[in-house]
Length: 168
Image (cartoon, rainbow, N blue to C red):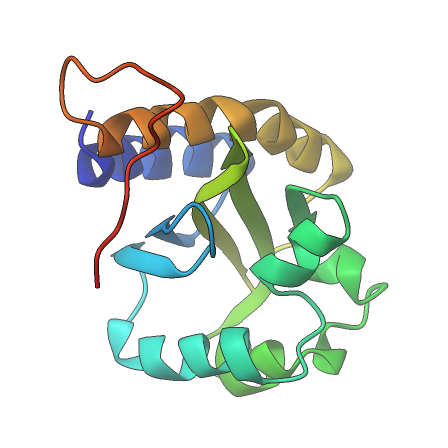
């Protein structure tokens, strides 16, 4: 599937399975992990520049890069801050302002690359994501990475020794 179709379906299926109120999905350059596209469901994208600045430049508790450096593919803001989300710059600047209480962050890592990322969000009026929900997403993350990798490749291209490239 093209990545935009894959993200729409995952937003419904995976987001529904863990009880997300909103989500944001990104394809990424597999070598650098730099986001190359964004799909958002239930979010105001006018905040995207701020979110990107926080992700790339702020001293943030949980970023995709920190998640990966810690050897994890999935974590929640609630867990990363030991139940104190106000320790997060992103929480203070974006999540709380827009009525969100917890985020579940996912890196879609496989085949020596990060093929995408996602953030699933819950409203402040709901409890944080549970360990059971985190484990469910962890079990899906590598398969989603594989599907994203496939969405980058033209039909008929199957040689894993020749990864796709991004030209900017």
